[in-house]
Image 1 (spheres, rainbow, N blue to C red):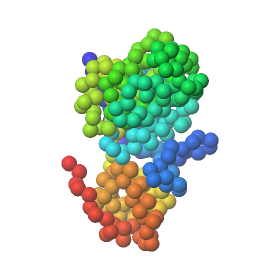
Image 2: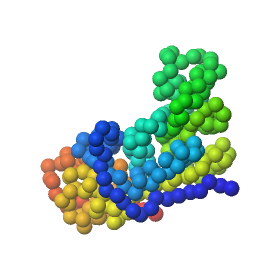
Image 3: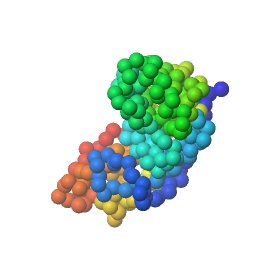
Image 4: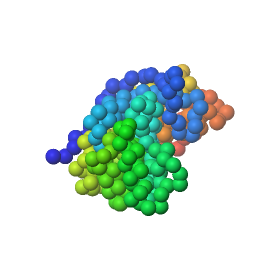
Length: 262
């Protein structure tokens, strides 16, 4: 029996991070950008809550720029009680690289032991209490040996750990064919891009640059260039604030249209 695959619902809730919660970093470090709790963030929160409660394994997938990393980090920032461990492995990392990253992320005494068995014992002990959430971004870059190492830590009866993997949707089919993941992932959570209706509510809430923009112009900018992709909207915002003109319509005429979605 395969794990269920879910897409986010079409409901969008507009709210912003506040208080002492640290906000995830926006693309291009847009200092006046706000954290908008889109349907992607709301649905990711629900999926992560279930995963943590069940100490399961979750895979968040979506196209580049759709907001996987931002949504994941936003939710983790707001739930410190999950004791998240965040890893961003380098391409084709080796198990020793993961061991060292985990050693430092867990705050274990440095330097890490050179002996893999000793290192694993320290990591396993640290993963016993408190229970933790291991969040690995760009998980599609993990080598087969690193995936097997994650499985080893997850399956160990001594550890108390949930796992959240974030990966590009272009690798979804390949990830599903990895037996180690296919038999353990309890939810394949798919993020998609913003739709046309969301553009006119999410983007004005995202940055003051678009607060008074004509909704029709926002739709044109999205159709011509951003195509619902949050990273492209961050790039558009950066470009518009760097130019002399403050007219979104003028910006529209200066853009080179992107290829239509297929």
